Length: 236
Length: 295
Image (tube, rainbow over all chains, first blue to last red):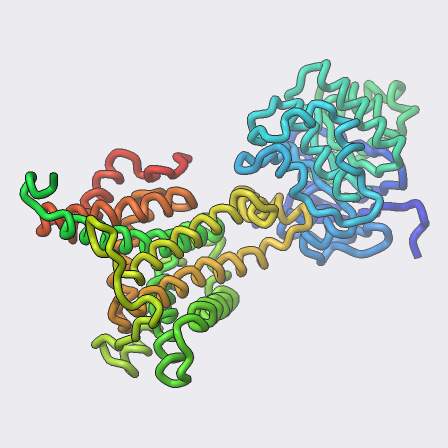
């Protein structure tokens, strides 16, 4: 019997890349309307955690409950259809599709999805670039497109992997505005971020990941006071 | 003008037409091969055998059931498609993660089994398939006589090739296919059933071969080895055009058929090797092929 507000419950998630044991028991919770950040050094296992939740990681064990339903044994496409959407680090914009096709590729899997009009209101730039080849867009535009297309599906739980990576500060601000709007719209977000400033402005809670484990949890309000502790974790 | 150059117009255009018809078969078969290689990463050596099955099914329908050309044009490709789906599900899908070599060997083996089985029952000499009545005869175009059936083959091949191109490049099903080709894992993470897409793609690709088989039945000898002979040339066509390129297969197929036809007219000795010579040159200059992507 799940609490009505728990969207994602991960318990003792283990993961392997081939023979290599990379996740050693990740546990975290995501409640409805929350933005939760995964912080940690490069190679700590943050992206791997997202991939494991999404079922993209081939070998995994433990428990991943999506809205109370066990997904650890399910194939990726079924996890997606339960309402979890993944925005990968490299953005994953298809070069063999134009912008419109990229936008419309992920199927609508739940009612209450954002209409295209609503999406263009959030991302006005995309409206004029629909016929362009997907990869001809700038980095910031590709990031907007990557977020836009998963909003069109109706998925409420979004896994965003380093959405601000490699982007100019002015674009990062736009993405921050977007993620804040998503939070207002009651989306549930797991955010992997290296950019501490961005994470601190957006997330309600932060998990610190180190060598495939969650080693600490910091609430949004404690972020500033825990800054030196965080810096140590991140080797900054 | 042609007489002044020393050869006759009807002979020239006749040879050109034969070239275009061969080109139509090259296009249909290399299109299927290209689609299968592009998405499944399988070099489908079974393609020739499945083309032969298409022709054989048409012949069997006529011989054992009295079912004529027009129903066969629908039934045979569907049969080949379903058989292809069976092959993909049972054998081929286990090889996707492996080196191309394994797919090549497996499909080569399957081709040997299929052709051997048919050879056992029907021998190697050709079986005859009668020309559908409405296509018997020719029309006089002035500079040459155009056999009606051959005109039909070229026309329907072009239509089928263009329709395939349209579905792949301009529809949402085609988007799913292109996305799954480029990044299968991410595409699946969006909820798209990629394994099913692979199965249907293989079925469709070989269905095209089956369709070509029926087209071939009235004009080429229907025999268990008809696919093997054609497949070698088709592979050369795919190499020249570029594996995985839809437009490349269509254009190159027709173009090489025409070049082969013209070579046969001007310098018959070289006709058989013309395509392979071009393939060798292409591999030296641009291995990815004319329309292939260098990655």
